[in-house]
Structure formats: C-alpha cells, structure tokens
Length: 60
Image (tube, rainbow, N blue to C red; front, side):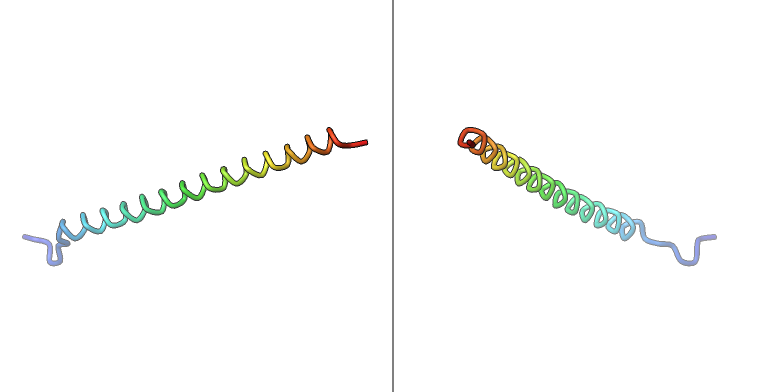
C-alpha cells in the first residue's frame, strides 16, 4: 500500500537547494561586510598612528 500523501522528491530537493542558495548568498554578504569593516578599521588605525606620530614630532 502506498502513502496517501507522498511528497514529491523534486519539490523537497528544490526547497533544499533554495535554502542552500539563500544561505550561501547571506554568507557571501556577511563575508563582504566583514572585509569592509576590517578595511575601515585598519584605515582608522593608520590615521590615528599618523596623528600620534605628528603630535610626538611637533610637541613641545
């Protein structure tokens, strides 16, 4: 006897693929955001370092 309401395997596979694609898209977006934050952070550290070097060299 067969199951009265079988789920088609294709719809389940496409649902899993859709979830996987959304997860990969979100992961890519998050990774890109982390690189931007890292870039801004390193840039800011260099600005602070240059200001401190200027202050030390030109201080009285």
